[in-house]
Length: 446
Image (cartoon, rainbow, N blue to C red; front, side, top):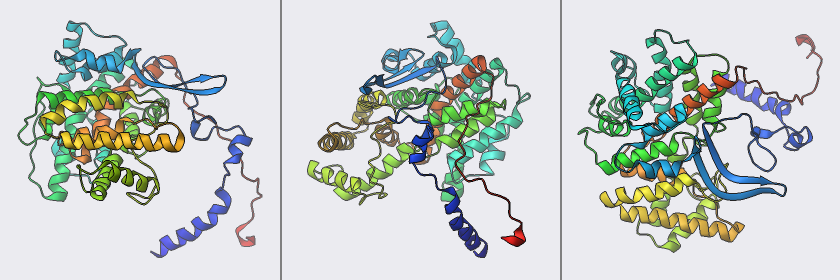
């Protein structure tokens, strides 16, 4: 404690030397947080992988438009509606993001065969790295597991494009099972629950396997698997500028291995302002349900809870209502629109109609309040319904963000490969020094 008290003193003094007023960013024409003055992101690269459309830039400023998410130029809505019941769409989305075109039936089947061949995890990996070394935080454990897989690779530092693709597909296939094993290990060690380990089924899709490996009885419905498959499609990529993908490309530009770049991206996605946001929504809604008295609460009581959230008198005191608003989307988040629709089938199957109705009423009332206050509603983002979808499938909250990792991994790989192909330079943006120039003073004279 004595050491920490000294550090606190040093930290207090340091504030005199670290203050940077907001006005200086405008004065020096520096983009704070890589954002323009109008809130739009500073463009830092070109990509053919995906596009996130939430506004148009015109001479008069930013023009809000309904949101669109395109993978290789194809609407994510078309990908989800196109899969029907003939196949699971996440694997098709992976092929599209990695290779740039929609596969024919033979190509798709061969790709799935190759991907499923990578399901197998190295001998003793689970026992040595997960069961004997459980982690209290699954995202940190995933980072550790990915870095450990480096040691199981015969040529881990090979960063050639084709080799990056192969290593990336291996990680894509293995990580869902590893996430489940890390969860089982944590529950066994910290919660004293019975331990069970299931092996991946080579005949299952990635979504089916996740549910099978996670559950004690390995049983799941087709509607559940389809909902999880849809969630994975929606999370597969979100442009090259989102924090975790940008992190991946920045780290990759140094010439390091793919295990290091993926580990860095997982660290980025862990944050509540990025991949951890759906967990914040779930926790917030727990507080709202407690305040309102449950899912059958009246609209007036829901409105009251939202007002309390906005005043900072409910949940975390931040004054934020999580699950609404987005850095890019201005009118609507297409992922939220699709997910709301896809939740209906599972809600009916699970007899969760009342719970689903509560979420939709909360959404509508919040949008009404925002319209009253600001003249326009904030868009509902994907995080508002994703936590509810996971809860319906009885997926533990510890796995919400790791599931995001399993989905977004393919986007990280696609952008990593793309940047290797068109730009071999290290990413090295500049900053402007705004401190004083000070002469060194010998210690005895200070």
